[in-house]
Image 1 (cartoon, rainbow, N blue to C red):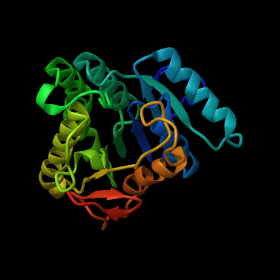
Image 2 (cartoon, one colour; image 1 turned 45 degrees about the horizontal axis):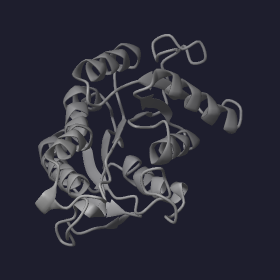
Image 3 (tube, helix red, strand yellow; image 1 turned 90 degrees about the horizontal axis):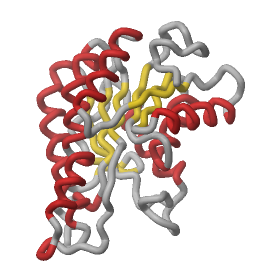
Length: 249
C-alpha cells in the first residue's frame, strides 16, 4: 500500500493545507477526511489496517470530482509508539510540516458497565486509545505543527466527558474523554505561544458503528470537527465545542 512518501498518485509535496486524521477508516473520521479534502486540504487518512486505509482513501477519491480530493492512506496505530513515530517521520520527510491534527480514534462505549463495578482492564484498554493515543500523537506531531503557519490540533471528545453533566454509566468512555478534555486544556495553554489552536469537539450522538442507530447524520457530526480544524488565526483555543458553540467542561 503506498505511503505518503511513495504514492504514485500524489508524488509531490502539496502547498495546500495538510491534515492528518486518526481512526479514519470509518464513521466520523472517514467523513472528516472527505470534508477536509472538499475544502482544499491534502488529507492523510490513517488507520491501523493499512489495506483498509488504502481502500477508504481510494473510495473517497473516487467519490469526489476528478482532481479535487488529495487523500492519501497512512498506516498508524495510536496505541503503538513505533507506529506513531514511523508515521511522524514519514510526514516530516515528505512535507516538513503538519497543519491540522485531528485526534479522532476512540474505542469502548461501555454501556454495560458501572463505575462501582467496572472491569479496570476495560478502562485501561480504553485509555490507551482515547487518552494516551491523542497524547502520544501530540508528542510526536507538535514539532511538525510548529512548522505550520496556521496549526490546529483537534481532539474529538464527547459531552459524556463533561463534568458539568456527568452521571453514572459508561465509565471507561466517560472518564477517558474527561481526561482528554483536561489534556486539551493543558496543551492549549502550553502551545498558545506557538500559535497552535487546540480545542476539543463533541460531534454529538452520531449514527456510527460506535454510536448506533438513531443518531444525527455522520456529516453533521463531522462538521463540528471541521469547525475546529479550520478556525481562523484569531479563533478560540482551549475550548470545548459542538456545532461551533461552547460546551461546559
